[in-house]
Image 1: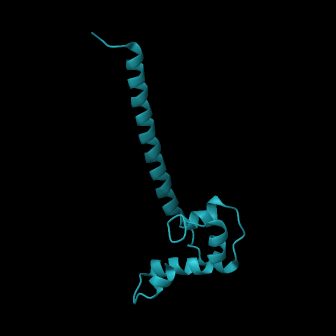
Image 2 (image 1 turned 30 degrees about the horizontal axis):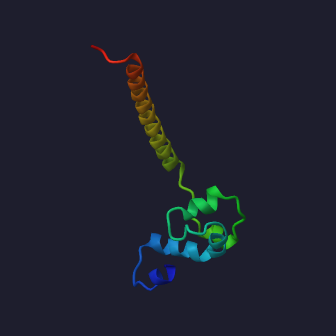
Image 3 (image 1 turned 180 degrees about the horizontal axis):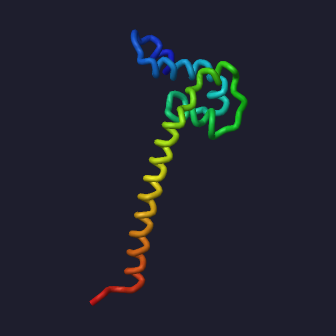
Length: 105
């Protein structure tokens, strides 16, 4: 797929960097992340899901970690997800309690 994309006249910077990542990390991707090529899973596969030694060129091609402000945003999203999960749990518990008590006539 990368060879096909490289033939395009103009690519956004992010796309060019993504293709470069696949070129520089080809060995690691082929050996550890097969099936994840050109997907959003390739970076987590290389950096989080597997503990592998990455070549220097592969490490340089990986996206840089985002700053703390973005980390705070992800924590906020996580807290929103937790709040929603807690709300769903409370609703399920209430429904289960009503089911145990039986119908009200």
